[in-house]
Length: 276
Image 1: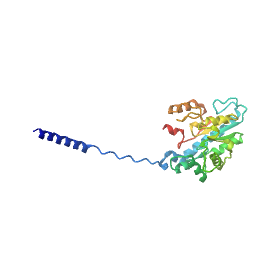
Image 2: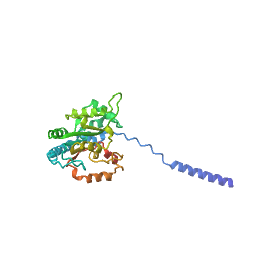
Image 3: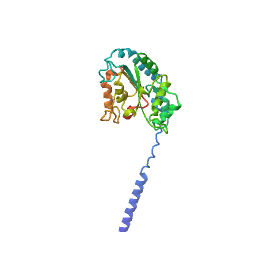
Image 4: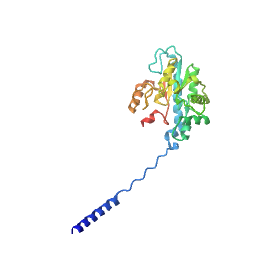
């Protein structure tokens, strides 16, 4: 009787185990990896095709050109918060390069990820630069009025193959700017990694401010105007930026936007992408 009972209990447990095993859900297949398609990136497509994009950049540069006489005449004015004793210095404007002077939209649509500065450098050895609408006319107006024009970019200096030049990218940037009809030289183009500069553009702006009264700033990134906008620590920054701190910077300098500071659309890349 005992053997029969044990056998029956064993049979029941085996049956229950079979039921549990049979009802267990099959493992879900691994999700297909998401393949980035630049032709589906609305930010890129907007810059490439939207008439509104051109209208916005033209509007910014024309507004700035109209303000030139006022800022030149008012020798107490500076677009650099904290710049003092600049009344007798000659006026200057500082422009970012990528998406402010030249548009990289064709590169963004064509290159294969991941991004490298070498890919960008090689692209412009083979393709013509595209001017941001309005910039050529603005620079001409500024220079006609006696204003020096400086270009500050975060493209870094990197050695390339057997090129002895420690910063071949600088000549590349100069060539791009000149190819759209704006003459410039090495003294007026400043890259990251030159002279121990880092990606905080504040140091390069301060360098210009030693010899010039900076009357206007242009860029497509918050970092083209103020420091400490990134998650990484550069320049004077001691804590990583946050969404809240970036928003606070916009509010803190509210009187400058459209009044010496001219920001252009930058949906393709920039410091904002770390805060999505």
